[in-house]
Amino acid sequence: MERVVSNRDRDFDGVFIVAVRTTGIFCKPSCPARALPKNREFYPTASDAIRAGFRPCLRCKPLLAGGAVPEWMARLVARIDSEPSRCWPDKELRAIGVDPIMARRYFLQHFGMTFQAFVRGRRLGEALRELKRGTTLDTSALDHGYESLSGFRDAFGKVFGESTRQAKSAPVVVSWMESPIGPLLLAASDSGLCALEFVGNTNLEGQMDALRKTLGAPVVPGTNKYIEQTQRELIEYFAGKRREFDVKLAPTGTPFQRAVWNQLLRIPYGETSSYQDLARATKKSPTACRAVGQANGRNRIVILIPCHRVINKDGSLGGYGGELWRKRYLLELEQRVLRSTEDL
Image (tube, rainbow, N blue to C red; front, side, top):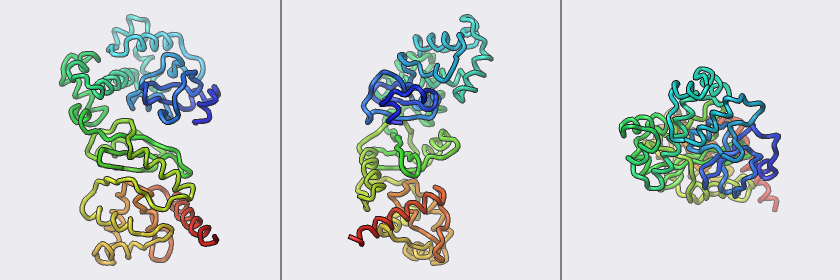
């Protein structure tokens, strides 16, 4: 995707979206606007970028990508771009010659969200960015079409999952990176890396909701020093140049889960441990493999807290929330690096 964006390849317009953290906009891959690679984020669809708080680029018009667009759609997008904070009830749509039912169906078909959900996402994304810049809650609410603060808080909570006060004071920032075993979702707070997960094949929005509930904090797109350090260290790990991670971890879990995760951190690179050994090391009965396995499955910082190094007593791989092929890849990678070192 980086190569496509650098080459401004029009063949990929409508295939994915590139967002720019510094400007808060999202574009088609062929957009002539330039951004540093470190400031780019990629999303599968425009609706994902909108839910993450980005707004469409006025230059390349990414909502109009992917083939012929009805005249009314182009006209409607232009009106929204000129008045992003405005509410658009059905009567307003009819006033500009747009059928509300047709708009709803078109947005559902092409963006996976209704027109009203799209408009709310635009307004709330803009409002969130203003809150981060220090705008007062009263000003942000009124500027984005809400007649009362309670209405704004309710709408904000439905999209971002937490109150505006929490979102302003203590958010968890989320980013992602590509890897040899698929995209990885990274989340970090001011305390350290909170989560590192494989991106699911189904509902990314549902995965974000689960992450938000587990961490007990609002989740917003962005990056910080822990995410950037993790990305650098993972690149070195997959290249076979790093065996231990230095980034500060901030996992969320029960005392027993944390005890299991601490034992996972003690399993040496390139080696494995059985569930029975793990149960014994956490001062549980060696037969308490089920409890240990459940704690293992609750680990939200994959690879760095190496739950992939736990296998069955008979040597078979056992289970793995990230699918067994990823577990096999990680184990083979580490063993291959160890063998190459021994050969030297």
